[in-house]
Image (tube, rainbow, N blue to C red):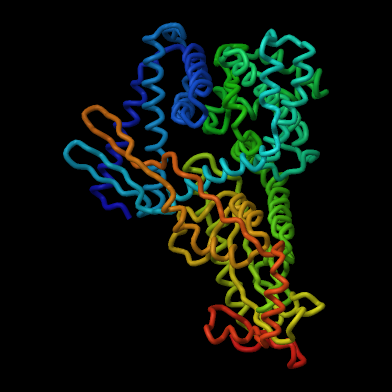
Length: 587
């Protein structure tokens, strides 16, 4: 726990930080003009420097967004004024620091030992004390970059789209635009498939006056629009935010999608950050679209931002906060079931046998179900099993979301369930259960064999963040899917990666100290920065032409799975079917 004196210093520092944020010059500008200037600066930065270089603007933008959409009066910021541009950039930079410090404050207050704070000689330093935190940041970014490469490896229309838009008038339907639109629609569909999109596109679940299918149709239409403006900017160097009267948007949605204005208005309400979202304490980072605060204020789109914002998961976050009962009744179970199916299919694609949602109630009504039981037929050993607990909270956007994994019904629950299952499997009933789950046709080479059992927690996002002291391994499904694709069914490779991932990620990730001035205080905080990509080695097992020869040589030499006990492995159950019953041998 944070000692009393340190907590006092941290709280005093937090008050100074809040006061400095409130005193930023741009907070005195009119909301609409500040929104316009910040939106233009983001788009210009993304266009000229790339998305990765404007992350700080996006973080600052979300902190200042409550002022942007407030409709407040004040001096009008001028996008042509170098002084105003410089001031807004300075304020966005400070707000970006504020965003990061806010994250670290949440960790510090809620997870003892997560962050290290020092106050001395007018300087504040904040560092990671729990390695699982920077590892989580690294893992998510690494998954995004490698996942994008995988999803878009066959998309080769970018140059053609730019060529078609090169000399076209903006917003005018021409033959070139009609030729380019299907290509941009294809890009949009690839993006949607890469997002956290576990719900069926045709799903009719009611999200609060509209169906998921209707929401997805509107989101796809806006994504295509964002891609058009992003590509137009690249083709003609005409970069900028897009300002859309809601009446025009509603008309376009009804005309193109057949969704009535009342329904479309409800969809936009959950997609657009406005003063009602501020009043409801819905975090601005859940939104890409903003609404000007004045009466009949326009909806503001940053095309470069909207094109990479995971809006599908963002709207789920908004619904979970605004309408928790709707989320629990309509969304939660559907996501959970779809998550199990997706993880199961990833294992099955590499040749593993899978059983999902396996009930153990016949043995003990208090036992949890096994979410996913993965079986690998090992020709020279017997079988290896992964007993998997799956947890699928909506992936987080910021610290307050990340901390929800510690709730008793979230990822932390999985560790308790694993311990219960471990104890069960070591019982006679547990061994009978394991025997019953093995393939009915028996092992292809041996009557007596070894069954190795490992436990694994698979999540929608968490890669072990806050759980570094636990012995059960945790992996998020995107990392797992990539690992399985690379494995070629090589269980040894999978086990090696699961055992060593944390070590390799810690070696690969790069942190640096970010410094800024807070009044008379010099502040430095540790952050994960650009790091080399960490890809898994390519396995060669099921497709290896020499695999059969290796197995045949093992059998010809008279070797047997029980030879493994010369170098006994942990947590092994031997099932000797030659005894004529299904009782297990030694542990």
